[in-house]
Length: 338
Image (cartoon, rainbow, N blue to C red; front, top):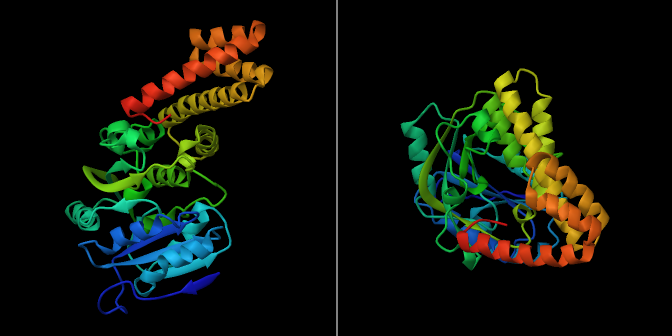
């Protein structure tokens, strides 16, 4: 691991900052300058910036991109270990009482930190604060915000997080460092959805969440990003929910909610795997996964697809391809992620 520790604040760099901004970087050289600029243009000044190069294959380009910012950031280079390990590395080097997470392709509006820290000041019992962000990078989502598609309703609790009634954006969330340390930080065995796992553990341990509906961040959409791969997302969510089911001390009502969501996630994963196998021309395996998924969904369309794959596989493949294209276009126009 290589560390370059440099002052991140305009004056008195020896002073301990209130906020530590954690920015893991992996294959985002074309975007990280915009991210760092947005962080350095904050009206709130009592913070440090920590960038973790997680063994990125684009390291030469990444180093060139961050070169103009080196006198204002802390740079850490490590072997690739995934986003959870990268964030934990940043946390272990953080001096602040609060951890502000920012992905290296996302951005903040200038008043983001000021507004979030003011919200903490007005609500001192809170441990986690998040807000809304506008989408950018995909014209189909122009004018849309994260909370329009994934809203937060009512108080944030373990059950609401499990049921997706509360939805946090990693790049628009600030956590008290002490509570993150208490629950063991990010699970480094997870190569995706580590934030979701942390939110669930924090809620289980009694952390108090609050949110603002103001748009104060910009959330970049990229075709190659992890969140655009539904099979990967559902696989990791399944792992996380299975871990919750093994947790001692979970209330029975919460456990029922977790089991219900776990059943849905497994079925959704089977459905997405079936779609991929159908697209690849593996009709037999596609039918098997569609059959498993339909044990949960009880969909006439899925049942028709199963029968079609049994008796008319190639015609069903062609019809499903056309249907998927139409459905994808409809979802994108409506502003929903595929």
